Amino acid sequence: MPPSSSSGIKSSALRARLSGDVDNMSWSAIRSDTDVLRALIIGVGLGWSVAFVAIALYYELELYADGAMFSYAVAVQDVWAFHWHNIAGRMSVFLLSLLPAEIVVGLSGSPGAGIVIYGLLFYLAPLAGLIGTFVADHSRRRTIFVYACCSTALLCPLIFGFPTEMWLAHAAFWPALAVCHYAKRTAVGAALVFVLMLTLAFTHEGALVLAFAIVATLGPRGLRDASFLRAVVFLIMVLAIAAAVKIMLPPDEYYAGAFLRAAVHFFDLDIFRVGVVVLLFAVLAGYGVILLALSRLAPDRAYLYAIATVTVMLAVYWLRFDQAMHASSRYYLRTAVVIVTPMFGALAALGAMSGDGRLAVPFLERAMATVRNQGARPLAAAFILLTLVHVIETGKFVAAWGHYRAAVAALATGNESDPALGNPHFVSSERIVSNLKRLSWFSTTPYLSVIVANFRPKRLVIDPSGNYFWLSCATATANDQATRVVPKEGRDLVRIYSCLHR
Image (cartoon, rainbow, N blue to C red; front, side, top):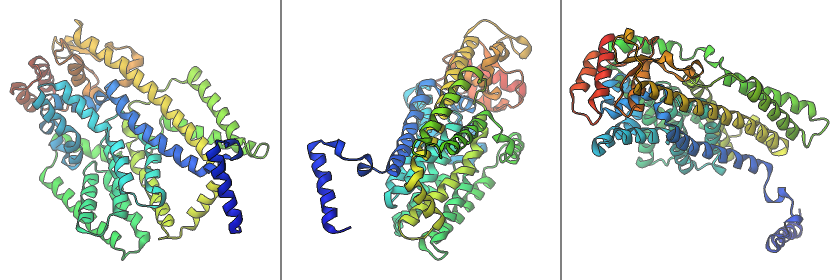
């Protein structure tokens, strides 16, 4: 294009902006479809990361499932003795969320305040991870940060609410990826890479897969590249430290077998046979079929018709046919985080290197060209549909959890009891209406009942089907006899319950 023509276009655009005559400017002149898609992904990712904190604290999701046990341990100031000495390989979670919360209990004298701090620090992780990624990512147009937002929006709602340590692993993965690629080759840069790799590796054993993935994304730079070699050395050091911790701080005999069984089934494909996963794939498949069917009839608006049709179908499903509840499956879908996060990370790293001119990735460049030319709007519509599913399923979960928590509180403060469970002060969780039992987590119900009764329960709520007992008699007795800010009534009931089984 001749310089004069280019100048004329710029002048026209400037005059239109100054005069407010936006009708003379097309949307594409202001912002491209790919820019809109990018903004959508960033907005939804950041929106979820803020919503996680607000929803979790409002609905007290730090008490859900294993969180009830962790919160109780914080309240009675015994997190390490109760359980974390068994999982020293997840030290990052202990240091970043549980230990500060326990310290707050000691300083404030308020067990409730400590539980809130635990929930705040735990559920703040995705937002902190995105902020760290944004700061560390020096790729063109912050490609890694965009993928981090996408991963947060699409993966984190699957496990949101369950206190799996993979929640922090996902949050730590993205700034670690960005730092490994863009940290300066100085002592400070090296220290930052090492600290983030160590933090990631000590969130969960599955996070070692993420650490290997980060190093693998540096491979295309060249096996002699300084950043790649630095990451390899630090990964070896981190693995050595992790092995040493495992040897020096092994789990108790009771837990060793349970951890082995959990590890064996971690990558069981049956994990993905859950309602929400089937629904997400059905939405994508339905949207894709409708989009293809209409693409010849209305190529410019096919994605609008497709998203409208699928939205109507989803509304009919949720209002008339839906009986599913994505609750306990949130725990098992941590496996999806381990598998899919490295895929997003690989695409992010390749895109960043391609954008920086470090690497020519033909398939990625062709894919991006397709998105720029005609794929941004259909992709945005698909992203919106997946987000809609996550929003509705999250809403169903937190609403039901609120009702279940209230039902447990009613039993814990009521007069009904089931002495057959081992003590006149025990009551069965089977008394809760059946549609709420999907929110139960049998091994932690007793600890939840103490907390929701403001630490002064009349009854300890017990799940008769429970066959996993967190505390030994010796550990529960030591805590019961110690001076703690939590009233003795609840701790005494926990001691009785523990001594009946361990």
